[in-house]
Amino acid sequence: MKIGVISLGCAKNLVDTENLLGMLAEGDAELVSSWRDAEAVIINTCGFIESAKTEAIDTILEAADHKGEGLQKLIVMGCLSQRYKPELEKEMPEVDRFIAIDEYKNLGKILSETLGIRIPNTYGKSPRKLSGKPWMAYLRIADGCDNRCAYCAIPLIRGDLRSFAEDELVTEAERLVKEGVTELNLIAQDSSRYGYDWDHQLHLSSLLKRLDAIEGVKWIRILYLYPDEIPDDLLDTIRASKHILPYFDIPIQHGSDTMLKAMHRRSSRAEILERTALIRKTFPDAVLRTTVMCGFPGETEEEHQKNLQLMKEVRWDHLGAFAYSQEEGTPSSELEDDVPPEVKERRLAEIMELQGEIARERMEAMIGKRAEILIEGYDPLSDRYIGRSVFQAPDGVDGVVRVRSGKPLEPGEYTEAVYTKVSGMNLLAETAD
Image 1 (cartoon, rainbow, N blue to C red):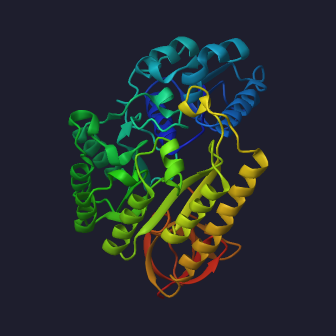
Image 2 (cartoon, helix red, strand yellow; image 1 turned 30 degrees about the vertical axis):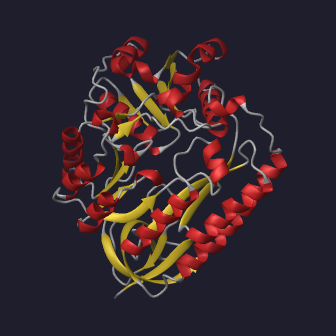
C-alpha cells in the first residue's frame, strides 16, 4: 500500500513521525510524498495551542477532500488525537482511525487492522527513518513534563516526565552517526531535567559526556533548558567538551516576578539574570535563545514593561514570542482572560520590534569574525551556499548564513568562513579562499 505521512508541530513530534516511518519501512508499505499517489495518509498532529489545533484540523479536512480520488484511508495520530479523541470521532467520521499517544505501544497492530496490510508492532524499536537532512538528527532524551506551568497543556497530553535510558540514547546516537549524522540536537519538554524521574537527581551532564565521546559526531546542541536547572556542573561539562556547542535555549516566558509566579514558573528575574550572566562569562561566544509570552491573565502595562526591560538587560541572540491563549484543562483556564486581543497584539509587536533591534546589533558585532559553517544547500540566484553556524539551530527560527565560496561546497560539509554583512535576520559570509 502507498502511504503518505504528514508531520505537524514541534521537533519532538517529528521524532514520533520518524519512528513511525521506520516501522512502516519494515512492513508492506511504500512511502509516497504526493496526495495523488497515496492510498492512505497518516497525519501526526500537534494540539498544544490554538494555532496548532487549527492547522491540524485544516490539514485533516484537506486530506479528507482527497478521499475517493485514490485515497482510501485517513488516519490521525499525535497530540490532537490524545487530547480530543472522543470529540473528533464524533465530528469527523471521514477519518478512519484516531490514534492517541497512549496507544503507540500497539501502533503497528492498529495500523495493520485499519489498513489491511502487515506492519510490525515495533514502534520505537525499529530504527528511525530520518525525514530531513541526513547530516542532522534530533535525539529525544525524555518525554512528558513535571513542571505544571499554569498555561501549558503538555502534561495533559504527554503525561509526567519519562527520561529514556542513557544506554539506549547512546546506542541510538551511535547508530545515527554511523549513518552519516554529524549534528545531534537534544530535545525534550525540559532537557535540563533529564533523569530527575529516576532518583531526583539531574543526569544531563552524564549523558552529554558519553555523547561527546562518540567518534564522528561534530556538533551537539541542547534545546529547551529551564533557567532554574542549569547547574554549574552542566556548564563545566560543556566547557570541557569537544563537540557540545555553547548554545543555550532557555525559555523564560516572562521578565516579571509577578507574572512568573502567576505562571507557576520556578525561576525568578534575578535567577534568569544571574544564570545568563554566568553563561556569557563562561562562554564569551555563547548563543542565548528564549521564548516569552505576553497577555497572560493579570499582565498590566507595568509587567509588560518589565518583560521588555529584561530583554534589554540580557540581550538575547534569538527570541520567539507569542500571545497568551487559554487552553482548557490548564490552571490558567480558570482565570479571566482579561487582556484584550488588541493589547496582546500590540505588546507582541513591541516585543518583536525590540528583539529585532537587539538581534541586529548582536549580529553586526559578529562582522569580521570567523565561524564554522555547516553547508545545507545552494541558491543559484545569489550564487551563495546556504548554511548554519553554531549561532543557528536547525528549526529555521534563527535564520541562516549565506556563504560565497570560490570552490564548490557539498551539503553536509563544514567550512570556515568570515562574516561580512547582516541581511535581514541572516548573515552573509565569505570562505577564506
